[in-house]
Image (cartoon, rainbow, N blue to C red; front, side):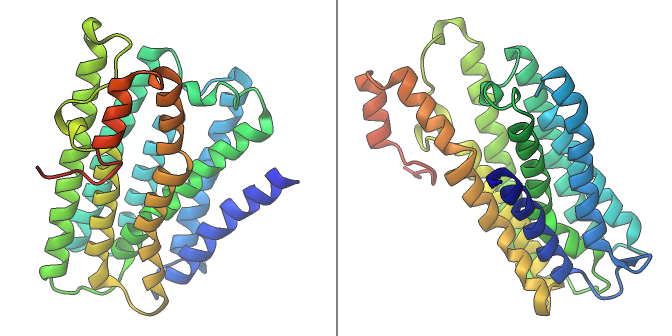
Length: 284
């Protein structure tokens, strides 16, 4: 019963948010366009869950999430009669991020032979379904600000707020890409086998890739601000959702636990924890 209630919440929350945020006049056969896109995002996850459960594999989990981002974003563009340059830029940013991260995670999981996070999840249909449903929730909640902006029938001038958001996105994207590449190079070096990374951006933050992701989605939300009015302001929950997900649910808590298991008795690791910021990088 708890899993059923959790799935209902995971479905109901994003549907409620996007239905409230749907731009006036953006409808498909009488249905709010954002609601249709949200249902499509969830539906893709449920369809992908079927072969994933039969094969008991999570290898295309992240890739499916990325493809879903691209699908709903392009869907929003196609539903807009004449997207402006500002709307196109938001859509391109979401697709670029999704394709980059999705391909990166897909290659990493295949090289590693799987994702350890799913070892005790994929053997249970209920728990595995929850994981796939949560991915649909993640897609909808993180992209809702972008989709609202793309579907908007308003054409506000590109001002300081929009430009600030674009700079935030570019900075966050660069940080995430650099952090991922630094960690990949570290792991691929046999001399670092069994060690933890504490160089480059990882010397300034214990989770610089997550900081970059939070910052870039905050940037997307800021870029959407000129397009928002009334109940649509609810989509500013998007970066807060990303922050909560990465710092409280599926991101950092899992890595912190694993780090303690691997290096909890290592004085150097304990010193790293004491002297390195958890998320927000130190500048000096």
